[in-house]
Image 1: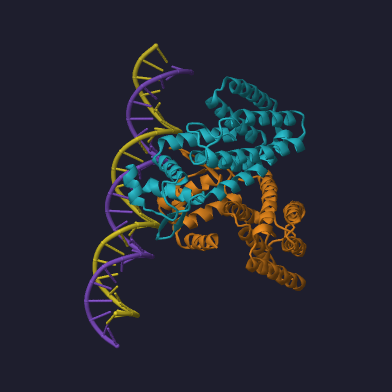
Image 2 (image 1 turned 90 degrees about the horizontal axis):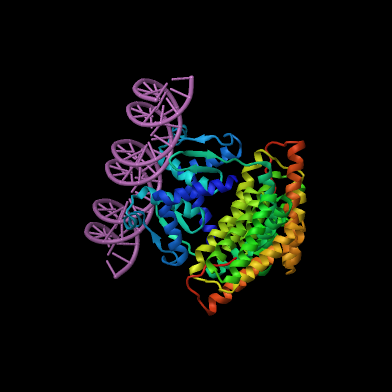
Amino acid sequence: MEMGNYDVKQEVTDKYSLRGRVFHKLREDILSGKYEEHEELKEVAIGEELGVSRTPVREAFRQLELEGLIQIIPNKGAYVTGITEKDVKDIYMIRSLLEGLCARWATEHITPEQMDEMEENVYLAEFHAKKGHLEQLAELDNRFHDILYEACDSKMLEHQLKDFHQYVLRVRKKTLSNVNRGPKSNEEHKQIMEAIKAKDADLAEKLAHQHMINAYNNMVQKGLHEAYENHETQT
Amino acid sequence: MEMGNYDVKQEVTDKYSLRGRVFHKLREDILSGKYEEHEELKEVAIGEELGVSRTPVREAFRQLELEGLIQIIPNKGAYVTGITEKDVKDIYMIRSLLEGLCARWATEHITPEQMDEMEENVYLAEFHAKKGHLEQLAELDNRFHDILYEACDSKMLEHQLKDFHQYVLRVRKKTLSNVNRGPKSNEEHKQIMEAIKAKDADLAEKLAHQHMINAYNNMVQKGLHEAYENHETQT
DNA sequence: TCTCGTATAATTGTATACAATCATACGAGA
DNA sequence: TCTCGTATGATTGTATACAATTATACGAGA
C-alpha cells in the first residue's frame, strides 16, 4: 500500500521531471547497449543531446552510479559499466532465491484481498492465454509478481525484487522471450497460487524458485536461437 | 579487482566531495534515528546545517531515495522512510540466502590468491581472538566477507551484498553485538573456508547461510538485553 | 631525443539565480 | 458561517556562473 503509492509518485517524477527522464533514458541506453562499455559520459554532451542543463544530468548520474550502471571517478568522469550476459544470469539466480523467499513470506502474510486478486489474475490470464492475447498476458504476468511482492509484507524484499524486475524488463530487447512462455508461465503461477492458498510455504518457495529458473532458461534458449520482436518478456 | 578499485574511488569521493559527505551524514542520521519517520528534509535547512549549498544536498537526496531511505515527492519534499527492527530482520534473512549463494559461487570460482588470503584471515583472527583483540577481530571479520564477495566472481551479487553489509554496519549503534560473538563468528568462518577449500559447495552454502542467521540471532538477543558500547558488530 | 615543468584547455564540483509548483492565509460572496 | 478564489510565501526544479581539479600540449633544458 505504502510502496504502491510510492511507485505511483515515482512514476510521476519520471514522467514530468527532467531528471527522471534523463535517468530513464540513460538507463535504457546503457542496458540496450547504445553506449560501449567503459565509454565516458560527459555531462554537457548528454545535456545538449537531451536539451537540458547539467543539473538534471548530474542528478541522474548519481542514481545510475548507485545502480551500478556507471562508475563516477571524482573530478574525472562517468564511465559506463554495462551489463553482460553473465550479469543477467546472475540476476536471475539471485532473483530466483529471493522470489522463493517472497513466496514463503507471502504464504504467511497474504491478505484475503491479495489472495483474491491473485486468483483473479491467474484465471484471467488463463482466459487470455486461450485467446492468444499475448500483450494482456504479459501485463498480467508482471502484475502477478507485483502482487506477490506486496503480499510478502516486507518493504526491503519488495524493494529489492521490484528493482530486479525493472532491471530484467529493460534487457528484454536483447534477449527476447518465447511467445509460448506466457501460458506455461501462467501454469506455474497457478501452482504457486495454490500452494500459497494451501498455506504450504515450503512448496510455494520451491515453486517460485523454479519458476524463475524456468523463465531464465527459456529466455537464454530463445535469446540465442530466435528473436521474436514485439513480445514482452515473461517471468 | 574491478570492484575493489571502484570502492577505493568511491571512498575518495565520499571523503573529499561535499555530496559524498552529505550523503553519508544523512544516511547515518536516518539509520541512527536522528530523524523521525515521515519527517520532512528541507534542502536549504540541511545545506545550512552542513555548510553547503543545495546542489550537493539534492544529489545526496537522489541517492538516498534510490536506497529507499527517503521518499521524494516531486515539487513537494523529501520524507524520511526510516528503518524498523523488522526491516533489519528482513535484511538479515535476505542476506543469509545471498551469502549462501555467494559461498557456493566462491567455491567454484575462488582463486588461489583469494584462498590464501582467506586462510590467512582465519588464522590471524584466531590469534587475535585468543589475545582478546576485539577491534582487529571485527576488522578481520568484515574483511572475510569482502574476500568472499570478491571470490564469488559476480559483480551483481558482490554489489548487492556489499550494499547490505554497509547497511547493517550502520545500524550497529542501535543493535550492538555481543563481545563474545567475535571468536564464535571466526569459528564459523573457518568451517566455511574449509568447505570452500574442499570444494564442497553445498556445505559452504549451508554454513554461510547459517552463519548469517546466527549473527542475526546473536544481535537481536544482545540488542534486547545488553548493550556493549564501543564494540563493532560482527559479520 | 628525451624528460620534466608550466601553461592552457577541458571537465567536474559547488554555489547561486531564476522559474515553476505547491501550501497557506485571507477576504469576497453566497 | 461556509465556500471558493486569489494572492502571497515557501519550497523544489532547472539553468547558469564560478571554482577546483585534471588532462593535454608545448617548449626549455639536459
